[in-house]
Length: 233
Image (tube, rainbow, N blue to C red; front, top):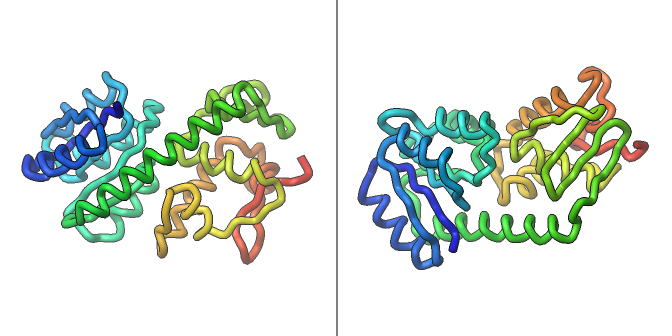
């Protein structure tokens, strides 16, 4: 049974989501305060976190930032009653996996949850097949099963989306992906209009693995298209 944490101060929304998550055979834990929810997320293992942005005690943006800073990789679906673009962009760039703006349909919510669970299952299957397989590209080593990245023998800490981008690109050296395609593949569905968040993630990824940001070794820019992994390594 999957365990889901809901951090939401609207008790009616909590009850509604609980009903439908339990229909998906999920065990549900809820917190109505941000600080309590953050502690819950740190102290327990969950398959998914449903996180509201506007919360007492600690807001959802801060919770997401702090969880990712502590290398908590649990998928996060962010909720908000706001419709401003900055909230969606910020949520994606700090490591949220998906985003729903209130009011949202239950059908859409269930579809997003199922999509995340499918991706988890596929990732687990792929990791099992590639058990202990380490890919080497020059001084860069990628262990997909343990999610361990090393550069010159030193551990490199990546956010979940940075890791997924690196694995996707390095699994197909020389293949160019445009930003829209990367959004679709890495975030799970098409965030049309938010291609610039890919640039942000690529820049942060490069800052962690590239010896020279001005002359990248691993992740190359395909001018007029997008990005590719260096096929000559």
